[in-house]
Length: 197
Image 1 (spheres, one colour):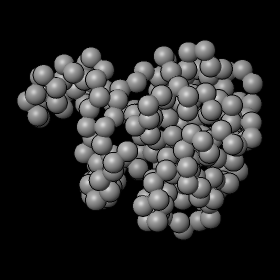
Image 2 (cartoon, rainbow, N blue to C red):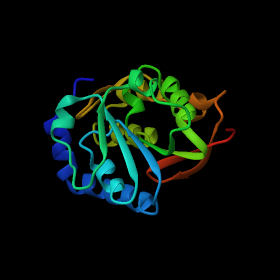
Image 3 (cartoon, rainbow, N blue to C red):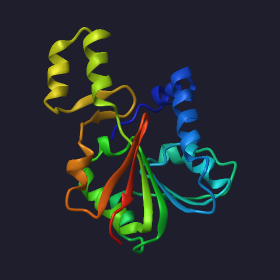
């Protein structure tokens, strides 16, 4: 994943980037006393927020992002990806956070299968994914590029402003056959819960 970290930092400082995290924090602020995995933790913004009241393990692939991470509260930071997930013991976490990550991996279903294995009974996954309809509308209205919009509709790979190539995925397809079910959709994110454990 070739990341343009300067573009991502600029996004985080923009009003819409700050608003995004305000919304995420409002959804997550009720979590207390939970064992949480933040997968694809980036600069540690969500991990740090959650670490105030929870035991948090953060996993991030990018050493550059880890080097610049935020840490006001203690959380365990690990570097890795799917290989590291596969080394963790079954039913280790009450909550798994995976925000804007699965668009950038080759097979999101593999990661969701690992998340399912790592969840405790009645555990939950907080998943944030790119808004496909919004991206398509933006492409047509603001970029005036109907051809690119057609490619997005066809599920083709697209370029993001800061993280490089991404691909649309459908959550229901990715969890088919896994003991997970969509519990709730909320504006910015999708909640999954363990259906069978």
